[in-house]
Length: 94
Image 1 (cartoon, one colour):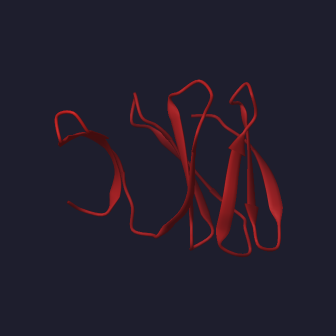
Image 2 (tube, one colour):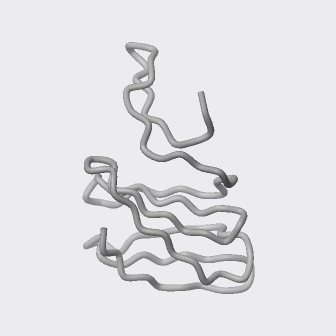
C-alpha cells in the first residue's frame, strides 16, 4: 500500500477504494453529514476536502501551524478548521 486514505471492507478483508494519495502526515479527519465528503488536516498546514464518490478534491491553505481539528456545518457547505494558533471558516465547493 502507498500512503493515502483507503476504504477497507472488514468482512471481505480487502481494500475497496483508495480515495486520495497523501504525501503529508494526516493529523485529523472528518466526514460530512451528507456522507460523501472526507476532509483531512495535515502537519504541513493543509486542509484537503475529497468527494469520495466522484474523486474530486479541494485544497485549502492558510493555517500558520499543524491542523488539529475539523468540523462541517450541518449543511456541509462550510468547514471549520483549527490549528494551534488559529481557526478558519471555509466555503466548500467540491
